[in-house]
Image (cartoon, rainbow, N blue to C red; front, side, top):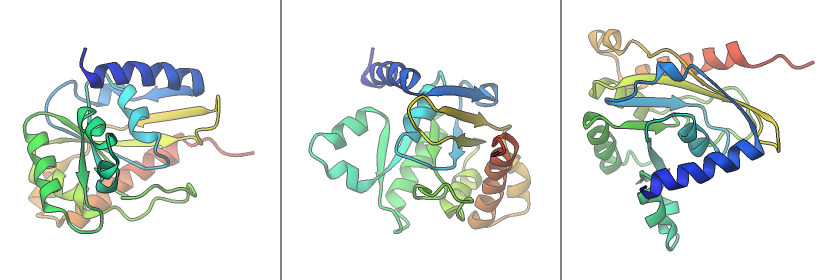
Length: 198
């Protein structure tokens, strides 16, 4: 068992004891082949939460500062994460991401770029998500995380139906335009599955 599988097993046990997790639409994520999962971002708990919700391993983009922590950076690498310098148009990270997708990996990204700590409406998606969708043949799957990560609270992970990227490419959309469409799909999942408050 590699470190990713071992860590996933431990995290799954911890999360199941800590939260009440409901996964919807798991069948919308291909079991193999280049896949791009785009999700809203509430907490540092998000990547492991999505990771344990799927059978196939995921690769992650993590802010470069985390890789400067002694020992932690190496651990992240073993957990399929790679660094990105946020706000700089990190070409190196973009190349790594495209390479992973083209090699048939599943890549998880958060198009908002930062955690939405206030759980307010989605922020504008960064162009990276659209870039990956346009530059690869990835199956693009929108994902929504709903909940507040309080002890024993209900957490929903919803995987929507793949987004039609063929039309995006035919229309020769800009990366920012493609990202905007991806964000609309994520918002639609949030609107559909968020339970009304009393």
